[in-house]
Length: 286
Image (cartoon, rainbow, N blue to C red):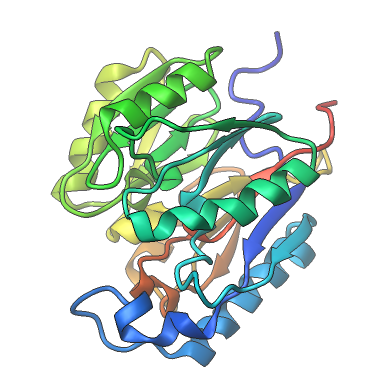
């Protein structure tokens, strides 16, 4: 049977997409009301992220080239939900973003994943509204994802319970809550994050512990296991330069090695860590 939650964070490959120059154009890439994005800084942040994935975490890194007609293409975590050898291609809420799925689909097909298409025109689903805990899936019902999109997650991953969680405001679920370990949910301190955390606690039969962080964005962290059995897992998280108030709280997580990265500039385009990289495992579990 294995240990509950043992599949969480076991990956061999990471997939990212380069930052196009069009992301720096306010009318194309930047969220309304935010200052203009420093394109060079955003590209440096993205390069450092790729380096950490490859060198620090030991993953095989695949980078799709930037596409100028897809300014938000680097947020490829919105385009697919991956578990095991199955990839559910999503249907982003924004019609302008739907062409982003094509390059991701081709890359995953080349890696041998089984592709499931979300073709229902009444469904919307962003991958960053989907949180896998190692035991079950939670799908945020948000501005970006509706009930029909959540039903497609349940239809695709039938071996797992799938529960829906209301998400307040304009956040994705992964922008409020994440996994700090196989049995630990981390969440921001906002009303939206705490409401999502309470909803998950009410819906699950699994005994998760929880850790509240001062910053919602800090909860968008990524738990990854090393290929070496004796090594502690990693937690990829927003570094202290981005979110200093949450750094001390993250250090309370047991048995993980913290790996900080920055995406403060990319955040202006709506990016979080879970939107900037995809993970998959092409190696069988030991």
